[in-house]
Every structure is written in C-alpha cells, then in structure tokens.
Length: 405
Image 1 (cartoon, rainbow, N blue to C red):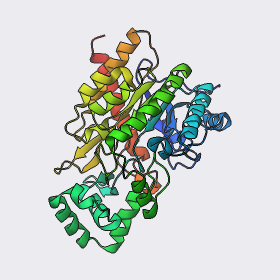
Image 2 (cartoon, rainbow, N blue to C red; image 1 turned 30 degrees about the vertical axis):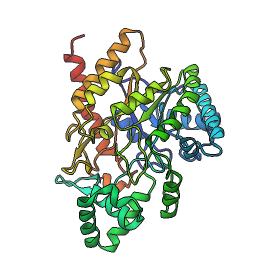
Image 3 (tube, rainbow, N blue to C red; image 1 turned 90 degrees about the vertical axis):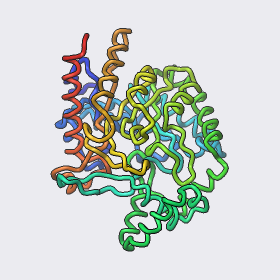
C-alpha cells in the first residue's frame, strides 16, 4: 500500500497515537501534527466475537493511509465474555478470533493488543476533575465507587468486600451527594469507555456479575490459559504479536476476578503458551496504581515479551485504591526510568537483528487549553496527549544521545 508514511526518528521506539475511527473528535490530521508516526485503532463497530473481514480492515487502512500515516497496532481485538467464561458458543468465538488474526496478518498488521477484564474495562468515577492549572483530568475514587456498589448496585457481598471503614466513608459520601451527581456517577461508571464495549445498563451489569458468580481468579486463569493455548500457536505462525493489557485499575472490582495486575500475573500468562506471540502491552499508568509494582524491574524481567507500551502516569491517593491521571512526567510513575529501560530493551533487540521498532503511545492525557470544548473520547484529548508525546520525545532524544552505545 502506497503511503506518505516515514519515520521521523529513525532508530527510536515508534511513536503512535490512538484513534477511535472516523467519528473520533481528535482527527488523523491532529495526530500527524502532534508528531505521531503511526496509528493505533480498532474496528469498534464490529460486535465482539465477530470476524473482522479483510475488506473492513483494508477500508480502515486506506483511511489512515490517506492521512499520511499507517495502521501499526490493533487495540483492541476484544476477547468475548463467552471465551472468558467458556460458556456455550465460546469455541465459535475463538474460531472467529483466529480468523480475524489471519485477516489482519493478510493486511500486514502484526501487533494486536487485547485485555482480559471481565464485564467492563477500564474504570473511572469522574472524567472532568478540575486541576489547579485550569485543565481537567480523570479520577478513580474508591469511596465513590464503593458508594455506587453499596447503594446503587446494591451488591450482596459489597459490604464485606469494602470493609467497615470504607463503608462508613461511602455512606457519608452518598448521603451528601445531590441526586444529579448520583446520576452522573452512575452514568460514568456504566458508560463504555474507550477500549471497552458499549455502555451497560444496571440490569446488564447485574447479569454480568451473575455470570461470574462462581468464577474465582483460579477458574478465570484456567479459562484464559485455554484461550492462549488455542490462539498463540496460530498467531506465531502468522507473525502476529499478541499483547495483553493490564487491568485498570489493577485490583478486583465488585467481586469480579482480575488476573493481569502484577508481575506474578504476567508470569503466569506468559507461561501458558511459550510462543513469542504471547506478549504484553506494558501500561505504565495502570500498573503504577499499585505501589507494590516495581515497573522498571517489570520491564527488565518481561522486556523480551513487551510488544507495545502505553506511557502515562497516575497519582495515587492516600487510601491505596484511589488515583488520578497525572501529567506524563509527573505523578507516581517514573516514565523517565521506564522509557530508559524500554530503550535499552529495544537496543538489545536490534543487537540480535530484530529491527522492528517497539511502538508506544502517549496514553491518556489531561484536558488542556480547548480540549474541554472538543468533547473527545474520555481520557483521550488532543492537546493533553500532544504535550505527553512531546515530553516523551524529549526523554527519548536525550536518552539516545547520553546512553552509552
């Protein structure tokens, strides 16, 4: 396919930009002007579990190519709930997943990100938290989420799961919350955030919880292990690198098992299928929410299987569960050290003859300047991500100049 694509920083990690398709308020032109070299996108209109046809893939490629970019990474080719639960129809969904991989490979796309979060994907309780500088950010507030769980969802095990102190705090929070803010909290939690599926209703959420009622972490791991053993050998033959995204946030929510939150979780998943195709999306922001995750050590340990990187930072709350989206080089996630570790890993690969650049994207971002007026996808503003990409590009340029060859 003829495009105007060219690398602007030859020999560096590939600078990519997430784009949600033709209806995204942040355009491909915006992405190119921000300095992106390639696009991360998905065919969100195709229902989960259905096949991505070659025609649909090529149509999206052509749109991206017309903007002078190329489609470098799929995010996400979602794993259906039938597969996660191994419920009736799961084998057809696996067959469809494999066919989608074959079609992507036929179109020259070889990096495919996915996640394993059950029922819903990444979670926030507030999408427009004011910042001291006049911008806005997203936040997950554990007390607010507990209030939703206890008093809106009214889940039976909620009180035992949250504990007495947080239940008291949630009660005080909910009692003082105006009805309009209660509606906004519920809508924020139920809406389909980017990378996830469509918005849920309360009835659908309760139905999803019921489906997982007898599925603990061990059973969920076993189901996913079977999925990996089915798809990874095929992906290896196709030259596709699959990369699992961490849980966001990286701990259990409303009783649902989450199995991609720690180094031990990664080790288990990588052990289930030995193929190089079985890899990781290293999301610094999600993993950094847990203070017990040493992110630099995780890059050093799993670098040989990191095929895609999300570079962002989060600021933890004092309660150990709450957090907000920080500016890329601020917060509790040391993106400078993490980027250095990733550059060293990419250099190691080049020394072994693997010249494929490691793609990364400036993940999420704060809403700055006129971002708030654009009403872009939650967490994905134009200027906030441009700032993040510019800062990360500066880190990369400095590192490449100062690190020993």
